[in-house]
Image (cartoon, rainbow, N blue to C red; front, side):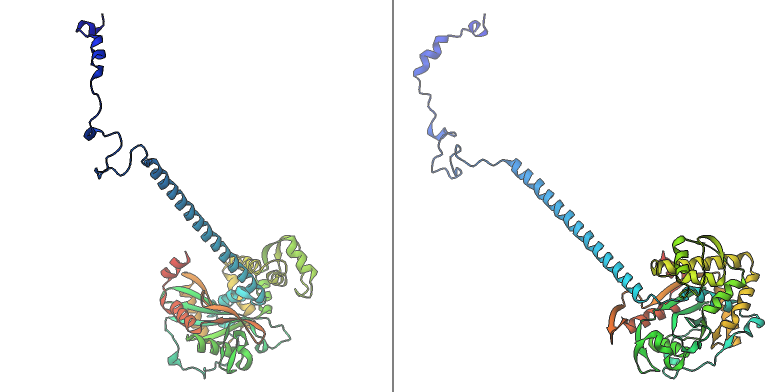
Length: 413
């Protein structure tokens, strides 16, 4: 039996009650048309605009997606611009290398060899063979205007492309480097000066390339120009040439170098350019003449590769010297007569003592002009380097006299 039958349910009762008024009172009609006098109804529910909250969610997601896309596009644009700047910088450097392809005939080779000679300069027999020039005072700037320190010795090292039949003083330096021996901070600091740097040359009373400063006063003119423009005291200069390098290498029995086929072909094909030297591909013990030709190769690749070859020879020389320290004396003794300097014997001894104290410390390199202080220019049809002289002067003084080895090492790392 169904439950409602047990409870006395009368199915007829519903039918009998059909006549009752089942309409909803007006004041209770919440589902029909909204009365005009009820202010909280703005429109009929049946025709009201339905708002889907998911639209808000998707809108937020789309906004975040678009924002992320914009961020990626900005990052991609910035990366592209960075690559363009880098390419432009590399292109500028390549142009600079082409303009200065004769910038360093001896480069760091002659310079480091000069350092070795100075370092062993306390040997009287070697000192007697050096060619001494009379030191000249700088008439264009007073000592009080120059920065100096008893703890620092500044020696100007000059490499020239002078042949045996030329007078050295008539040759413009291809390499100019200020070697600062800093006993205060127990380190050695070198500063290379680009030969095409456009500066005022006091002896000529005009602006010109830096290496033109030999025009009137010889190599003293280079020291005078550097002092005048950059405000640092130059204690003296040391000049070397090609002949010295060849003799030096021969004095230690040559150097072991691995020569490529391309390098050998270049030297053998242009005998006049490389002094008639001949090279064979492979690992060979090069003579002084062959080593010089190897270091001067520059037509087959870039200046960077040329300086790499120079460093290869330097390392070979130093490795031989390390194995047998007596070779240092042999090198100095054979090369001394090719050295020209305005330092006296006593001054060379002092420089040697300073070097002996600092040689175990760090060695740092810089160049004039410093980064961000120069631009290419054209003066009288010549491509040169314009510089901010005062900024370079300030930075050079700080580098030589103030910066410690720890600070410079941290910057380098």
